[in-house]
Amino acid sequence: MKLHWSPRSPFVRKVMIAAHELGLAGRIETVRTVVRMGMPHAGLLRDNPLSKIPTLVLEDGRVLFDSLTIIEYLDAQAGGGRLFPAGPARWDALTRHALGNGLLDLLVLWRNERDKPPAAQTTEWMSSFTVRTEASLDHLEREAPHLGGSSFGIGHIAIGCALSYLDFRFADLSWRTGRPALAAWHKGFAARPSARATEAADD
Image 1: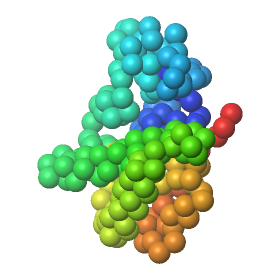
Image 2 (image 1 turned 180 degrees about the horizontal axis):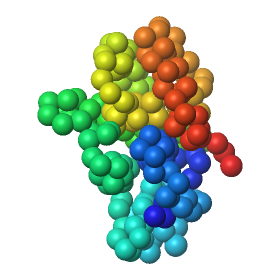
Image 3 (image 1 turned 135 degrees about the horizontal axis):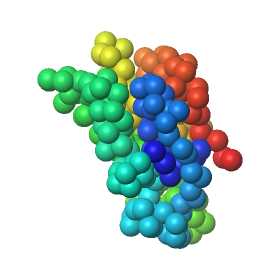
C-alpha cells in the first residue's frame, strides 16, 4: 500500500497511529507529499482529485480518501473490531472521533487565518476559533475520566492527535491549564509506542 504522507499532517498521523496499533505499519509505503491550500499537488491529483492527504493507494490500484475511511479499511485488514467497537460503544467512539477530527479541522483553519498579516485577518473568525476551541477542550476535560474506561480506538486517536496538534502549532494557548484530567489522559496517549513513532515534525 502507498500512502501520500507528510510528517506535519495530523490527519496522516491518525492513519499512521492506527497502522502501528494494528501491526500494519510495515505494509505501508509512505510517499512524501506536500499539499498547500492555494496550490494543488499535480501528482496527488492523479490519485485524489481533492488534492488532500492522507490518500491511500491499494495494491490493486483502488484509492481510499479521508483518514476515517482509511483507518476503517486498515482495521478490517487486521480482522475488524480492533479500533471500531461493535454495538452501542461504536456510536460513542465515532462521536469522539467527530469531536477530535472537528477540532483538528478548526485548528487548521485557525492556523491558516492567523498566519495572514493582522490587517488581513477576519476578527469574527479569530474570535470564533477561540470560543469553539475552548468549548471543545472544556468538553474533553469533562469526558477525560471516561476515555480510559474503553478500549483504545478511533475516538482516542482523533482526540489525541488534536491535542498533540495544539502542542505542535498552538503551544501559546497552554491548553492544559485548568484541565488536569485531560492533560493526564494525553500524557498516557503520548507515551504509547504508536504515538511516539509518529510525532509531528517540520521536516
